[in-house]
Image 1: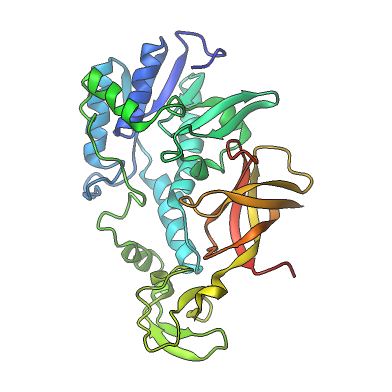
Image 2 (image 1 turned 90 degrees about the vertical axis):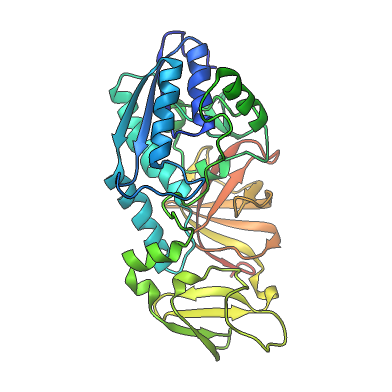
Length: 368
């Protein structure tokens, strides 16, 4: 897996209970490493998400333990409930309350798995920590680089843009060059209990799939009723809280009889307003970012490809670093529904290496 890690070296494998992290641990064991599996308990034991496909639930902890026993490796369960609630769940609610659209999986990787858990791995004397993410770590001339997975359907590089260089030096991703069928085949061959287990879904802490319930409970102000207005400020209707909307949304507005379909253009949390307009008004070609994480030198403008949503293909753009963690992205062609709170991730022109990324603050049709 890595010439810098010798057989027998201690590696912590983050085991969620799913097939990907289980096969990761199995591959490490097969390669001769001393593997320690760690599973995080992220929810109260009496309030585990029951929705099929939710990750890190009670059944997942049991599955991880059974896989560790099958592989003959040490396994520990760590209570990270309080850390997860503060860094991920409350941040999720806060982001919606600000009229933005959060990405909890990024926050979980950034604040919990690649921060707290990584520190624990070091405390255990591990030389590396491995996860089941579908990304590649490539040793480049300047050190470890983060690259997209070989399988574009499974690629998770967008969600790992906030990984720091120090973290990347320590992390390993054994599945980055594999596809899901090969991973499941290995699990079946080894007789792992979760070989056919369904993939986990996003927003693991929303057991019923209705995220607004969590937002309204943690940040009640986000449920404050308000007005739905057009771009001129004309009141078209009312809503039950901005947390029910996101930029680009068309359905669920409760508006009819308009000359053309209306979409959410902007959320105004201060005045509890939802601004709507025609689809043409969703297009933007300039994006302002904050809290940018650089995985390549970023001192001068450079051409690259960027992704403004996890499921969208990368598009050509020019990124200009502005200092103090800010950057401006000029898209070669306008993109629709660029939502504040989402991430804009920079890729090398060939679409492989992740150069960095930041959080979307605002977007506009053209530079002012």
